[in-house]
Amino acid sequence: MSPILDSIGSVKAYGWGKVLALTSFESIATVSVGSGGAANVEFTSIPATYAHLQIRALARTDRANAGDAVYVRFNNDSGSTYSGHRLEGNGSSASAQFETSSTSFTLNRITAANNGASQFGVFVFDLLDYKDTNKYSTARALVGFDGNGSGLIGLDSGSWRNTAAVDRIDILPLNASGFVQYSHFALYGIKGA
Amino acid sequence: MTATYDCIATTTLGSAQANVEFTSITGIYTDLVLIAVTQIGSLGDYLGVQFNSDTGSNYSRTRLSGNGTTASSERDTSQVRINFYAQPTSNFAVNILNIMNYSNTTTFKTVLTRTDQAALSTNAYAGLYRSTSAITSIKLIGPSNFSTGSTFTLYGIKAE
Image (tube, rainbow over all chains, first blue to last red; front, side, top):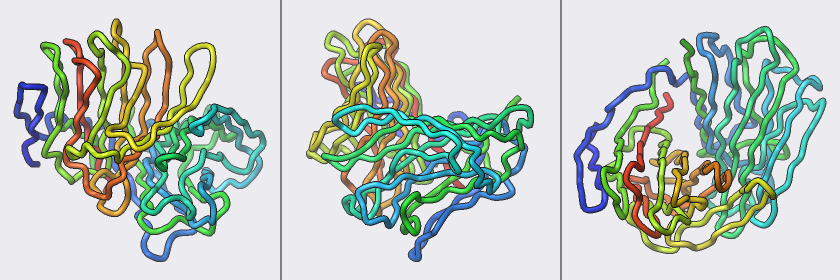
C-alpha cells in the first residue's frame, strides 16, 4: 500500500497503510450489478462462522420515482414474520413509522430513476447474532441519500420472528423491477471471541 | 473469506490544530470509515469535511436530530463542505463517517454519518459530494481549532 501522508495543521506526520488489521471483520461475498440490472440480490449459503453480519450497499432502483424503499428477507421466508420501526428525516421534519406482521423487513428509501443522475442511496445493515437459535433475529440499518435539496436519512430496526440461524439474505426493491447498474452490495462477517 | 477493516492512519492531537487532513488515500478499498472524536475549541458548532481539496459549492446533506426534547430534520445545500453539527466545546463528540464506494468514478459520493454528543444531541446524516472523482484526500475542519486530545482514525474496508 502506498504511504499515507497524514497532515495535521502545520504538522505533517508520515504513516503507512495497514498499521493495524482487524482480522475479525471479513469479506464474505459481493454483488456488483451489471448493465442489465438485477431484480434482487441474494446472499446464500452464508457460513455460520461469525457472530454478526454487516451489509454495506450503494444502490439505486429503476422505479420512476424520486426514491424507493428496500426490503430484506431472511432464509427466503415470505411469511408474515417480520416487524420493524423506522425513524426518518426528510430535511424538513422527522417522522416515525412501524410495521407489524410484515412479509419483509422494510428499510428506508434509497434513490430511484427520478433522482438526479449519479445519485445513489446507501445503507449499512447490521444483523446481530444471526446464527443464534435461541432468539429471534434482530437487525438495524442506517439508510440514506442526499440530492442537494432533497434527501432522506433513516434509522431502522427490525425483527424476524424465527429462531432459525440465518443462512440466506435477499434484498429487493419495494416498487421497482430491479437495481440498476453500478449498485453494489457487500456482505461481511464479524467474528466473536 | 478475506480479513479486512484495516487501519490506514490515525492521529491524536498533542496540541490544538486548525485542521486534519488525510492525503494520498489508496483506492484499494471499497468503503472508508473515519472515526473522529472531537472537541472544537471556543466555538464548537460544526465539523466540516471536504474531499480532494475541493472548495467548490459541491456539498450538501440531510440531517436527522434528537435533542432530548424533540426530533427534527433539516438540510444544507450547495455548501463548500459537509457540515456535521452538534460539536461541543466542553466535551467530546463521537463522529463515525461511512464514505461509501469512495473510489468509484461513476457515482457521486455519499457519506452516512452518526454524530453523537451526550450533552447536546444525537444525529444521523446523509451527506453528498457531487463529484464522480475517486476520493483521495479528506480534510476535516472546524470554525476554530480542534482541541488537544481529539482523535482521528481512518479505516479501509475491502469487499472481495
